[in-house]
Amino acid sequence: MTTDGFDFRTPVDRWDTHSAKWDLLAAPYGRDAVALSVADMEFRTAPAVIEAVENAAKLGTYGYTEVFDDFRRAAADWQRRRHGWNPDPDDLVFFPRIVQCVAALANFIIPDRTGRRARVVSFTPAYHPLLEVCERAGASIELVELLDTASKARIDFDALESAMTGADLLLLTNPHNPSGRVWSRQELERIAAITRPGGALVLSDDIHADFTRPGGAPYTPLADLAPDLWEAGRILQCASPGKTFTIAGLEASAVFAHGRIIDELENAKRRLGLHNPNYFAIPAAIAAWKHAERWVDALNETITENIRAARALLALELPEARVADPEGTYLLWVDARAYAPSAARIEGACRASRVLVTPGGEFGEAFEGFFRINTAMPLDPLLEALRRFSRALASPSTDLIN
Image (cartoon, rainbow, N blue to C red; front, side, top):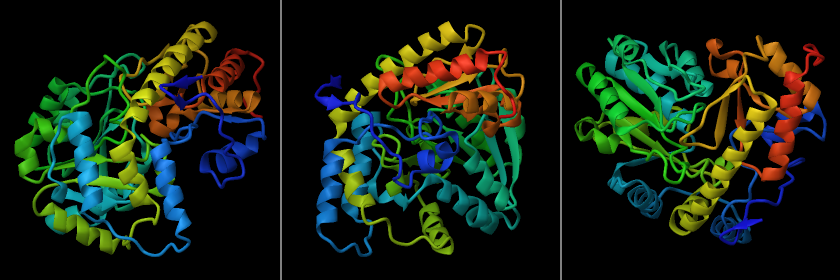
């Protein structure tokens, strides 16, 4: 089956490609294992991106590259066309990955400004690598637990306001990983209002921003909604083609920031040992942002259908589970505590079914018995894998040890 001429139904065999998702994490479960874990897609990327990478490869010499204005313009134009925000291309700082930008803040920028270790606030469940780099920098981290994440996640604004007292940095993800919430304008306005008095920075990791449901909640960049915080240099608005175009392994991200923090970010990059980008990253990103918009529209239609079908199957196979209906991302967040009172039960179901999901405990201790699945793969193998896993999880005979 194709969507608007693009093929999102033919499986891609990623075994023996040095894949972290398959050759590292799935391999212990056998060659018939299916990975629904790591958040990269099982689709071939857009034809324009493949062509750009192939053309770069044909040169036959792969020396150092640099970030020029064509990358900055392509990133800024994408924000304008897709999200209605019109950033200045000169306000872009290149990072290979957003986690490195967080490391720059926690290790260097905030301690240089304050003379002490950073104080970081994050919502939970949370993408743990962002928290890990803060922990390794010696930062203190205060977690604000989101409410009702397996239905429609809500922010405890009283808890957020308390946590932000004396904080240096708020880590925000929009759309939220793993719940799939796209924060509304009203919610973002309250976040901005709480953040405004204390002087804290806000890093908004929005790498899933291009994945929203057609006709659903619209994505709004925080920087567009809070221009005073943006002009004050207090928002780092993060974007990437990595998730959208399944090129995460090429490592290209765009951090939009304003004012003196741009020089601070560039200096911190050097202190982290970050210099030239991956040879293929720049041509791939430019081609994606300039020539693959129609492919993204077709991809979102496919993801929407996959999510609908996956939720229907889970309702049938695990009727006592609570499954979020994500407004964004290609992820499903499932409260399976009725079947999995412990993390061992999730792991046992993975081994019994040979299907990998991401255990909820990886997003926070309070979420053991939850799991996250990645729906960005051809529909038939997705549903077959979900059926295998669900039946193993529901079966009283599933071995919790092996």
